[in-house]
Image (cartoon, rainbow, N blue to C red; front, side, top):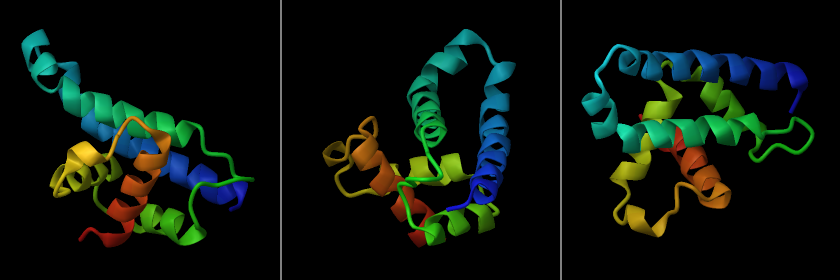
Amino acid sequence: MTEEKLKQVYEKLDKDYQSVIKEYLNKDKVAIINDAYRIAHYNEIADYFDCVDAEYPPFDDDVFDSILNRKDNIFEIVFQSWMSYSHPERYNFFSYEDLGGIIEYAVTHRG
């Protein structure tokens, strides 16, 4: 993975993150509390990618290419993919090992 490709991934992720978070900026506290679970997952995905190192990437280049080529929001498809698992309680979204698998599956197998 090159630094340039990682920079492109970060730009896409930042755009997607801003897109999903902006709807909460003008909501009242109750609406934010009602969606706190979803927001926590969005933040966990963002944190996961903040720790990606170009020298030791957690995925093959084809996964990063899939992220760059997606027109839909990465945060939303990863969250929805996890919610669609038959038994999501078996996958700990807040464990980097499990989250990496969820991200890889979501960006390479979803629509």
